[in-house]
Amino acid sequence: MQEYVLKSDDFLVSQTDEKGKIIFANDDFCKIAGYTLEELIGQPHSIVRHKDMPRAAFKDLWETAKSGKIWTGYVKNTTKNGDYYWVFATVYPMYDDLTNQKTFMSCRRKPSKQEIANAQALYKTLN
Image (cartoon, one colour):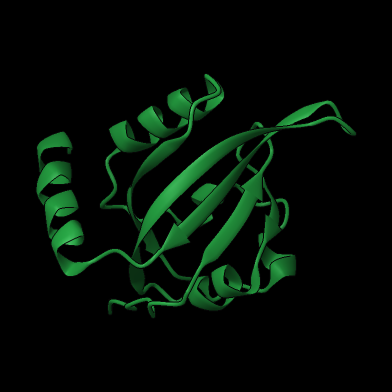
């Protein structure tokens, strides 16, 4: 497994339904994760979850977002070919008036090396 380091202008965006299934993904997310848009739509967002990520981090993410609050944090994801990449993620809860459904928009950017090191140290205490 090799690390893919995001470029400073990479900006990954995805949107899920209330159950966590992907309903939108932008080109940067598809390119970096190694999936086509067609492969991602309808899949659980956990398709890119890396095994090193503690469940407690995602529990906090979903509890925060489902309560209507914005969540931010560092996430290690896996690519289709088994490589990995780190992101700083912001998850926004949204309500779609047309469909009367709650959705979640995740916007992700490149974290610094220090931010990754801090996240790794924290996550070791949660695993």
